Image 1 (cartoon, one colour):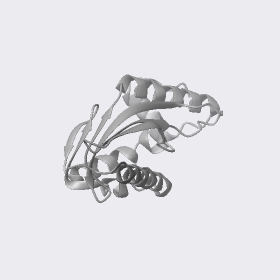
Image 2: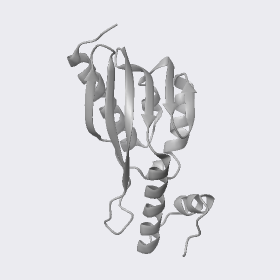
Image 3: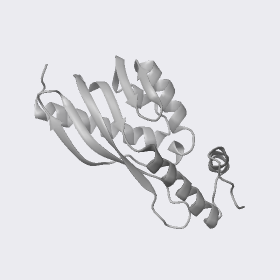
Image 4: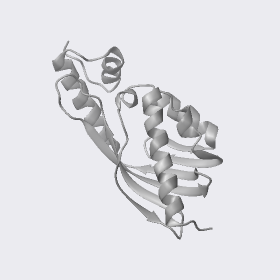
Length: 167
């Protein structure tokens, strides 16, 4: 099945608005609701999730814990639409909140979305280098620690990653 460029463009805009709303509310259930009941989510560091409820369980857990809980937005740096396949392919930035010193910390991923109609997606795949995200989060922790703002959840995460906070 194929969709018009206008429908795919609006569906992606709806996706982005929904993600922004999840960030604003601190509630990621709305993200899971963007997918069909039988959707697949391919996440290169965490594995594949089959079905909306598996996506919901993963995303609500992941985005409520460090470092996801400190990411402030997920803007698309660019995107392309493949009308024939019903795909939207984009680069999503993952900036973290200011650690207290004004520095910026972010890592990007490539997202491939397969459209299913009615503002729902049947598949998402996020491709990225997990080491880039690890380095970004560690650098954020170091900056927050130096600024005296390192939260407990980030401190615990840093220890789990084999690093010892200095403070």
